[in-house]
Image 1 (cartoon, rainbow, N blue to C red):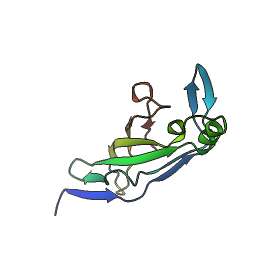
Image 2 (tube, helix red, strand yellow):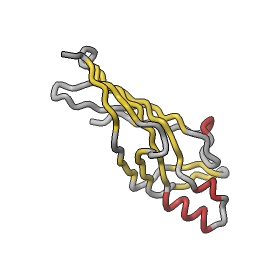
Image 3 (cartoon, rainbow, N blue to C red):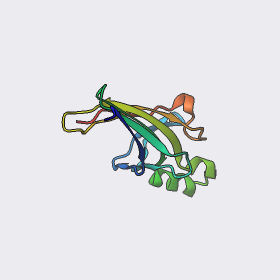
Image 4 (cartoon, rainbow, N blue to C red):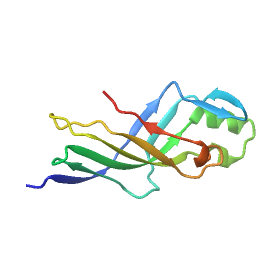
Length: 129
């Protein structure tokens, strides 16, 4: 029997209906709903379940979209590169629980984007309960 199991992540679907605060041009505005999905144009997403160490790790290639915010920017005549989805890599880990479930948390590495410069943008997934 092996102490670790490698797996491929085939689906990610999450949403933040209330949106997030975004600082833009010196003002804080709400992004409107946020959707998070697998980035199908990126390399596959993988993980490992390490039962000996009771740790789960995964690397997700994701795409974040702000449809209402992008629509608003588009209606104002903003450049198309400002309204495109944000690509990111989420590297996460968490403890494997007794029932074999796990909660993952970690930081994202944001790909270059005109509206969200990586040096000024941070995104994390916090531990669930």
